[in-house]
Length: 248
Image (tube, rainbow, N blue to C red; front, top):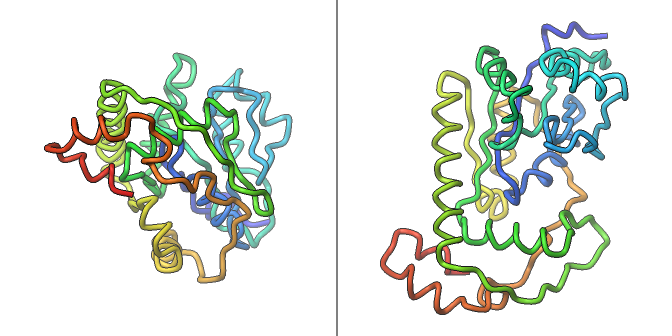
């Protein structure tokens, strides 16, 4: 067994519908990595398909969230595992009993933070609404893309979502400002996955190797086809810094 205090700890800090399942899959395919998905998903029944936690650890979360976090990082993996991490959404661990998780992570000086963001926040909102309506949150290799019916999104809902996400981005950057942090954009990972992953492996201090994911892009329809009132919204955003979100 390798010494747990020599392992590197990391988190993927992100929001829903930002490609974090795909990035988790990719990193989890590295021979030196163990990654556990959404360790602090609000649902205590949530479990990652990539690296299910032992039941004795899952039961510890309610009793002692800090002990749960430490027990996760200190699992007795074999000596080939040098990096252990999980996905943390900006709105995770915000309940009264789990808020100390954030302070604990900030005190972990050697924690590496992969800050994954989605530039197009209109697509981010649309993806979230479609997933909530269909209850279809991930598409795996070998399954056909979902064909969605269009929906209406109100102007104020778009504004509120964009501002909330931008606040989350700024808060995450500020909160972990003293940590080693790499920013990755969903769109850049989609456009040039090879170079983005190469840079990420260098940041984490991992040896280069091919990475693979069985997760596939869920929604392949253009925004204009999926938002009933697309033209109306685009007109209202025409003279704002967010108008680019309407260009597929």
